Image (tube, rainbow, N blue to C red; front, side):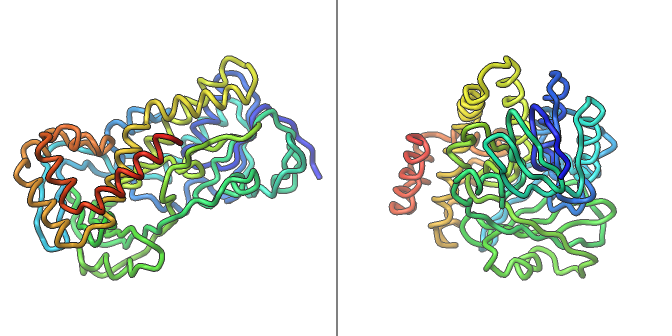
Length: 376
């Protein structure tokens, strides 16, 4: 078995792992990043829709990645009530190119990249088996996705997960996207993609997601994509000399489930936290604390909204849409892809009360979820 040594061993070569590897290597650390797949960025499972704030927080952004602009959105309730927003909202990017280029940037800064190198477990507190190598580390970062083996082996609970699938379609791409609520916080969507479009759906693995996509477009499919997403954010991101980042930490937006913004932000916070070159466990505590300080309100409110929606019947969701339609101008002004609870905070108190009391039991459950996260 080949023996290696590194300051930081990063497991997972997606956008969170590669971004962190780039930042740490730039700080002068010895970094090794290991990816179980033989090719970076493929296959990918992401819609590729990035909000403007997410783009600004990437360690690097290349306009060549952009496949389309998102300049309008339509949200449709289960029984057809629609809300429209017309303003620049996001860009659709080629995730394969984005992930590959970010990996290459990390390597250009001096990080060592290992492909076809799955994480096989810990040999000791500061040594891991990766592929055919034994790697001694000062710190290990789990960026290995929703079904993180790193998190499992340090004793963290398995995250509940959801499934997202996408059908690749022909037709004119356009410059907007449509989201249709199916049930609770589960939805299907239609978006531009390359020379055509994608029809996607997100929900429980047991849901008939493929059928849902036909409710938003009955066009014939020319291909399929799919992947798992964490269903909630972990309260803790570290244990001993190991920290988690990205989907492994459940760092996703609770309503739309997008993860690029929060993972990119986590990479910057973690790199900053260890830059003082002090005790690694203290640095990891600082990382966790700062991440929650910056993102906590959005996570807690978003998670509570999601719990509330999941307990509502389709007819009550229709009523929510009807109430929001009364403030459609406010919706258009305040809605942001990367700050999805901003609208709630901008609504008049009377309207928030109406929304919250549409279903008392659902409202109480949402409040209980909020309290659970606050006292984490």
